[in-house]
Length: 183
Image (cartoon, helix red, strand yellow):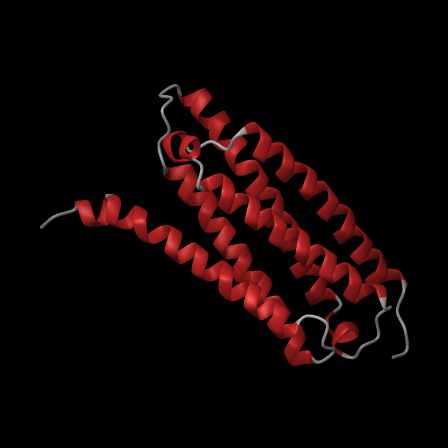
């Protein structure tokens, strides 16, 4: 029995298809459900964010398991953390959004939120999509494919967009926690 299909290139070639599919389905769910004040659309939005979150988590695990050119474990760990850091920021942002959606699900589904909620949700989704687009572009780079390390320019752009997204999500929290409406 040939074990190269399990541990070799066949598995490595299937992983990008798997996490890309999860992310695309999550994005489609978000576009269909975000901004609509019903319990089903809120559940769909949560499901969309979960799919994107799991897709990003699979990317982080996949990158963590791949071997780069450096053999020194300390350097290898730091380079993996450096490459996975932007992914982890996006995953943390999405996880926080999911927590907000669970905590304020009734208020959102009944439309008892300030008008800024939909605006900042859309801004956050657009920033997440921008980060995913930058991830995709960075992961197509020849240097990334050889070393499994993000280029510093891509990494800094991703950190900057991540900070903007953190501000957007904190604003989303303030809107949900402090500005409830009667409908």
